[in-house]
Image 1 (cartoon, one colour):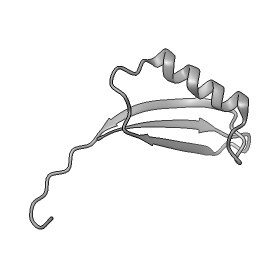
Image 2 (cartoon, helix red, strand yellow; image 1 turned 30 degrees about the vertical axis):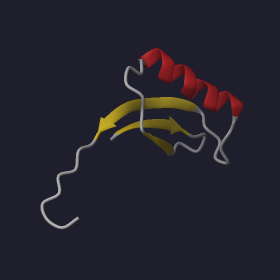
Image 3 (cartoon, one colour; image 1 turned 90 degrees about the horizontal axis):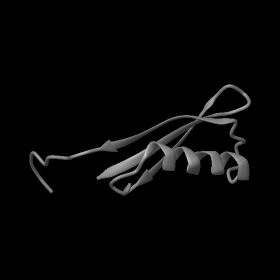
Length: 68
């Protein structure tokens, strides 16, 4: 499963991490930065965000060793 992880800075100097499961294939830097900037300017979270700091797509594979 691919997850889009977006990190933002806050006015207090802390980090705010947003993880979205089932990330689409083909996401671009421009598309993600545009979306992150929109989240900052529209102030959609209870925590105030200052700026996007990083983004990555994490592709995780789990292998069952035993059990189900």
